[in-house]
Length: 179
Image (cartoon, rainbow, N blue to C red):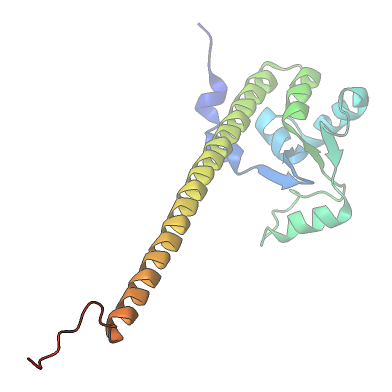
């Protein structure tokens, strides 16, 4: 019987809260992944450096000093030892999968599968949000067109009312009362 440790131990919300957006890519940081995988950040980085050919730029990149400062500024209180003097590695969805291959532990495999599932759920939510936004835009366009049509109708009403206010020119024969 297969144990599903990752889904019991790690709720989706915990993973979602550890996903950041850097350089237009959703990533997770080395320290957060190390915590989830049950290894030290130092050990994780060491394995990545030993297998650096498995991590092209779109799988993993090191944050710049500026990006790291932005990240650190988001946390009001820094936990002692949580943020090292070294710049963190940021792993994309593909990098996380590759990381589990490099770490080669059962927990790393299970956790990475759980993380990938969360990434897929996020992508699905974004797509459905996009579809909803497109539908809302269609409705807005229809409403705008209807507003314009209603405006035209009211202009015609105004013109008709103005015409009624002016005395009408009589047409036809005039019968004189002189008989």
